Structures are given as C-alpha cells and as structure tokens.
Image: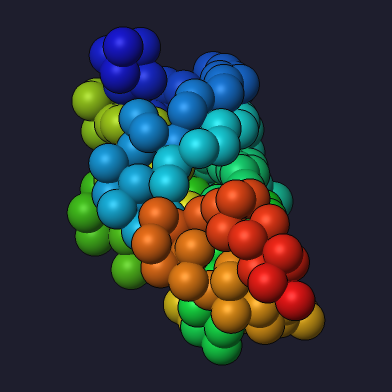
Length: 164
Ligand SMILES: [Zn+2]
C-alpha cells in the first residue's frame, strides 16, 4: 500500500503535483505507539510548487485527532492536531545549509522519498508533549475505568451512580 506514497521529491515539486489522502492512524507505527488507541484517520495533502525565490518546494498539510492521556487527571482525552509545513528541495548537499530556515526546512533530492514518513515525522513533531484537558473531569470511577481498559467503562460509571 505504501509504494504509491514513494515519490521523486524534486520532480514532484517541479511538476506541481499533489497527493491528497486519508489513512488510518494504525498505518503509522510510530504514531500508534504514542497514542492510547490509533482510532482516527490521518488526513494529509502534499503539494509541489515554488517558493518566493523560485525554488522547488513541498507543502504539507496534516490533520488528525488523537487519543492521549491527560497528564493532570490521567484520563483519556482527545486532541486535534493540525499542522502545515514547507520543505525546500535542493539537488546538492551543500545547498541544504544555505536554504534551511526557521520557516522552511531544506531536504535533498531523493528519487525514493517516503511521503508517509514525512507525514509521520510531522505528526510526531507537533504531538503535544504534555497534553492536558482544558478542564478535567475528576471522577474516581472514570479514572479507575481508564486505568483498567484505557477508556471510560459505562458500566463502571453506572455502578458508581447506583452506590450513591
Ligand atoms: Zn484531565
């Protein structure tokens, strides 16, 4: 499946090509290891073009919703991740330092460039390091359920209500 996401990055940029795709989070192994459960989809769009200097670039837009553990209440929370980035594609290693900037990373021409690896690198880069709910719901039943099976168990919540 991933072969179709191997591109010649320089030709892709120069040809102003575009890939628009939706893949399950479970197809990204490193991302899956960082989330509670890889349940959502990853949307991404890679577009070739040129920057203001006329250099070939790849514009990447990625978005997904991940399940993370809130570092305050330790319950599962969802976090929307949206990111856009731009890469300048150069054909000489010596040009990488020249064109690498805060806004645009420079990468070397590559005939077998993995778009999925790029997408996954970007997601891991912008994943919150210490995720927290805006407002935690601190229920002991929900917490126990979260520890037991990583998701709130409706029966545990019901049992808690009956005991009141
Ligand atoms: Zn929380």
